[in-house]
Image: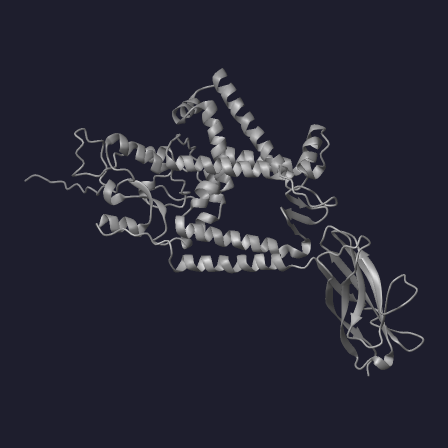
Length: 499
């Protein structure tokens, strides 16, 4: 009888997962540098058109002139911070009219919601400043260093004279574009020809130097280096733009029902038992954010549609129908996959809501703009003392009047009162009182005056009495009156001793 030894064999536990160590985990994922390939097609042409038009508007707009008279700046678009004015062609915005800026921002936001509900991230892919300047920087990069393959080889190559001069030329070009960008931005806050002369003579203020430097640095960093990182991590729009989309929104999408399963190109041209996607990777190679659209709609996708151009070029070469990657809605794609009729639904409840909100805000904006007064006055009563009792027993109240003349010519007024019996009015510094007094307000300015209103104590029917200050447009020395005779009322309250 022989002894037998039983050997216990433990099952293979498989690869051991490393223990999670939170102290040694990086805070951010390392960036994988992206080298987008150049591509041609309809969407690339649309992007170039957007780049040219938007950059032309940005750089040319500060040089446009608009005649507003001798006393006003003639720059068509100007935010005059020292004088607290904003000029947009014929429109002049005062600090008290900041609600117009709020109206523009609301219309812009709702317009962005509307465009996203219709066409997905069309703003991000074609009109966003980050996209526009990144396209410009990448064009310069390709011009100097070559297309995708050449740039990858240059990155991997060791130090050489060729690498030195190409990198130097590229960064010098980027810095020049960034300087022009920063300078153009400051021109919106300063007279453009004057600013250029100051730059030539090295006579810039500290504020001008700071903001030119700020926008030069941010343009160079964001368009030259950050690029897709801005769209993926810094911009908040991808985080909530999905709430604007639905199954009828046009987005960049891959027709999986038609493309799968993937395989290499069929030598015999027979694609009956396989998908049309030949797994060439061109859609990934041209993507500025480096994603694979075949994996579905992703946060990083900016909707630039360059992958459509790349895929269509490949489909044309292998003799397959185009638009394997296409601009389409989920509902249309599902209908096409099932052989059902394909319909577009641009108008649906959410788009009607966005249009209605835009129409209401735009209507209120233009109505108030068209009917806004060129004259305003604020009435501030004296608080200490509230009233003064004069020797003859009459009661006098003091008021500070701030009169705004929003026209580009002097305004001549008669100041009087309506709603008080037996009143007398006088401005500070006047020796006599009367039923009215004259005053002049310079063009495009605010005049502050101190007015005194006096009534007999017997005429005071209550402790307080409501009345109006009245400004009546007077005829100027040259016989002209702005817009015809004008009479404007401004509410006030007269106070006296308790009854």
